Picture 1 (spheres, rainbow, N blue to C red):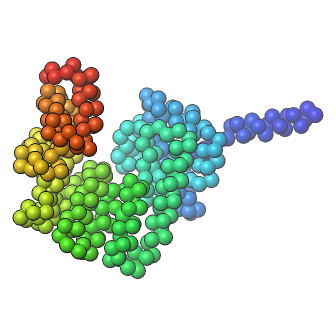
Picture 2: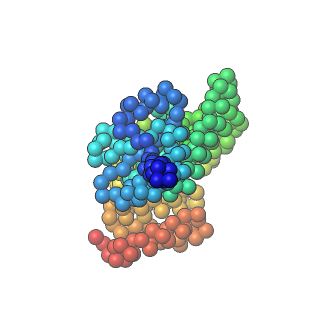
Length: 322
């Protein structure tokens, strides 16, 4: 009996001690994944990060997540204070952050911040399903590279993964199929939206400027209503570069020249954001946000403007200048 109990205790102790098989060598992990075809998880944590600790103690200690992770992925655990070069390569900002990669090392999606176990698993399962749909589409796209329907479908799948650059690239391929200038313009507006949600690096900024030039060329006489959208696209490039004075100039031009265009409300919202976070001129931020509420009370950006105003008043003492 004592021997049986000892074996049971050892067995249960073994289960209790089971952990995710975290790799510490990024290159070795990618090589392993390439050999056996598994997807890759690259998780970044760091010092003085309570949400990182919470994710380690709760999400990554969950028995279901441990089994799922070890079976499905090659798991890599890195730290921003120790793996600085890799953190720069992945352009890591706030932590924790988790990247899902294909077995070939292609970045598929990014999970920002702390996620509880069930949400973590559901998010990854959805991303894997979406990527498998993309893999099924690839032979069809190769056979018919100009098929507008296939390009649009693939673009939507990449958008689901949060890969705005790839989604935009595929959607641009449908421009030639646009039946008329209006449809062409709608595609360009959508492409800008995808790029604007992507990482604002130099390559993305150049792509946004190219889309703005296309909008201007397509709407030379201003009848398609693309002029304010092109101006806003250029303003967002300056925003990505933190060129605050240039952003302000472009946004104010939109507000004055196209007050009835659909970019005027978001221009005011962005102006408030720039004055508050970029220039630290809180009174001017409040003025822009109040203008949005007064001029465009039915705008989809009203709630955001109200929330930003409340935040400014709470943290800057109302309209006092810094």
